[in-house]
Length: 227
Ligand code: DC
Image 1: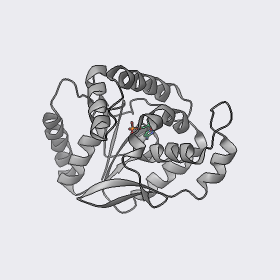
Image 2 (image 1 turned 90 degrees about the vertical axis):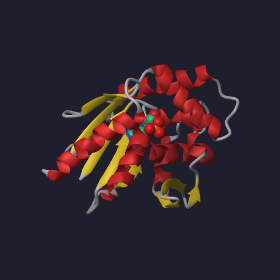
Image 3 (image 1 turned 45 degrees about the vertical axis):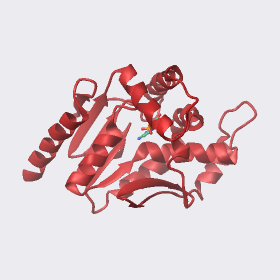
């Protein structure tokens, strides 16, 4: 069984996906973390041209040897591993936030990551969250969810995450503007834009508690499993 969860930034996709994975013993894959790892690699390796744009030739070469993976040994949590190094906190920084949409709009990046994501499903039940899971990665997913939430609630959620990672300087407005800009970029890109997949069930996370959403989606999963 494949559950595809898409939607805007910080709408609670990962929290829902993690709970579902625990409840039903599915593999959880955070595809946003995969794009974030590529963005971090670009920043660390300085695969940028003088005008600050990504140097696609360097990126193309670098993608041949990059290792993007998850380590699930830490208390059942998935930890992002870039080239064998744990980067779970680094990929959530504002530096990465500000370049990740640009990098994830590049077809060479998407092609490689989508292939890796599709291979992860072989012989396993999984829940995957991102922007193009129900449209491109698994258009035949058994259950497709599309998540939205009010801008202030989303910004509050991301700010809390940043603060708990020790990022104390960032302001609410900075976080909110970044979220709104990223959503715009994700919706406007040519390759695999963020759109609601055909057959997706829409959830507005600002109107329901995290627990209510989890219970609702769990009931859908049970129903599909029993059929
Ligand atoms: O879910 P997130 O905020 O961690 O994702 C970070 C960025 O990665 C987001 O701005 C868009 C991009 N992304 C994407 O293009 N496709 C996906 N399947 C997942 C994320």
